[in-house]
Image (tube, rainbow, N blue to C red; front, side, top):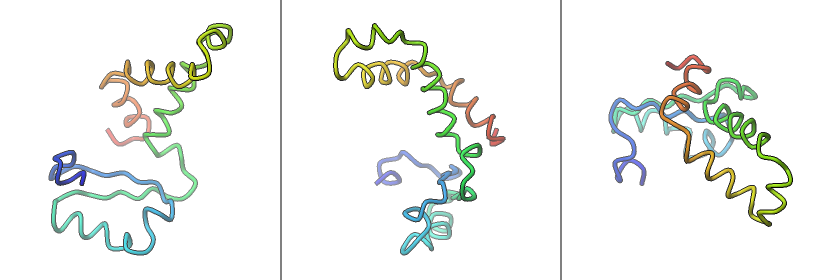
Length: 108
């Protein structure tokens, strides 16, 4: 669906961690299929290496920023305050922030 909707394009690199759901069963041929049919490079990260996974760096930034929100503000905001705060923080991330996560992992 991501390819057909135009989310992925020829020349893109899809980075996946080494979870079984990503590399087992029918997915064992995914790397060749993506490359042969769409020109998309699949990069499977080594097991237990979150420092190489850009999304882990995004979560790290989110946690750092969430820790700056005063606890009393979170309590006053109600039950879904964490979700609301996370949404605001993630929505405010810039292209530069995300690129920094890829640079941290030495992809850029």
